[in-house]
Image (cartoon, rainbow, N blue to C red; front, side, top):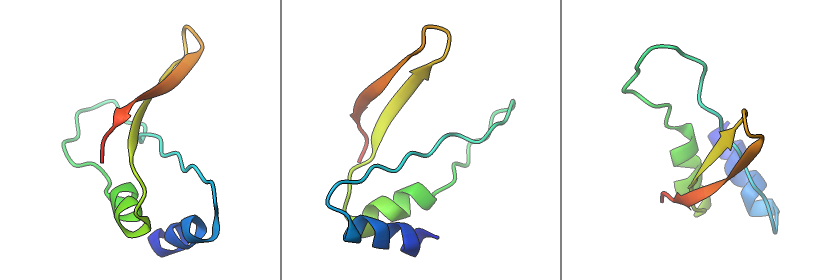
Length: 65
C-alpha cells in the first residue's frame, strides 16, 4: 500500500493524504509508521492537524517532517 500511495503522489500535481488515529481508549506508545514511509519515499511533508468536533473547526498546526 505504501508503494501505491507513493505512485499516486508521483502521478499528481496536487494531492493531500489524510491519516486519522486508530480508535483506542488506552495508551499505545507504538504508532503505525506507514504514513512516515510514504512521506519519505514520496518526498512530501507531514503536517500535524486537528479537528475539534465540539466547535466544528479544524486546521493545520505545524510541519512535522
